[in-house]
Image (cartoon, rainbow, N blue to C red; front, side, top):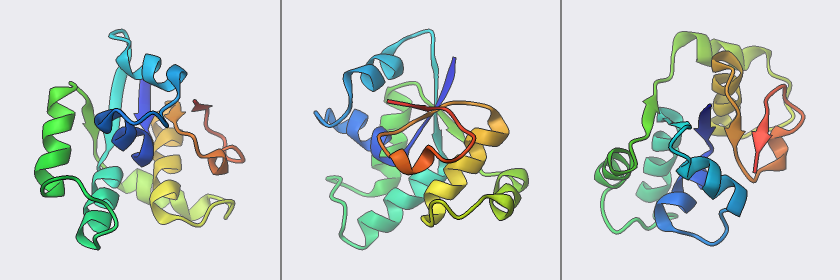
Length: 128
């Protein structure tokens, strides 16, 4: 199964954070699953690190790239189809990064691994 990680899920997994649910951890670690990290999450991390709201112990560019490579995750690009799909999404959630992740999960037909219940009104499967 292919899974798309929400930004916090990605970071919690990389950091070994106890906030990551056991079920999410198991899904991510299952070698039968293909794990995707969106370029949207990389962008969000870079913005938060640049603002000083997120400490990574180094530049976001190398931190995220190294962690993706180390864990054999795939990077999901942001396509024209993804960004234009956001236009038709209801405003259940106003966070532009989360809305882009919803659009990607919808277009790619993959579940989103996230603790955020704000995704639930959208036609995506949220696993946690």
